[in-house]
Length: 158
Image (spheres, helix red, strand yellow):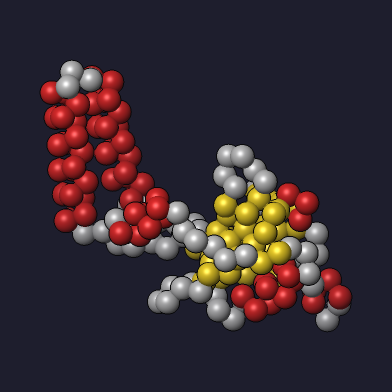
């Protein structure tokens, strides 16, 4: 095994955890959307009403979308997600590994990007020790606390 192969790892995983949604989930989205839209109409806020109706439809559509399977790569010089997204270590601030029960672990990478600074790479528990070994040579490991929006989306099974 060459030195480059020892200092890199590649694996495949789904972009995110897909959770099958039942009729109740869609009914809840519809009822909440309707109630907020009626409130916006009662307040004579037509733009907000239109926004809420569009948002409700988008949540229902995106909630049914199945994730792609993506190739992840962590190497000597960079971290790559699929063929499109790559970060050199100069553009990464820190990393964290979050162990999940009944799901794949998450390798959380904090980049210095202003638009989407947190990247989450799903990884099997057999992969994460090698990931930690490679990343710890380049970056500081921190503890990751999920945001309120992430906790809320878990409750909503989104």
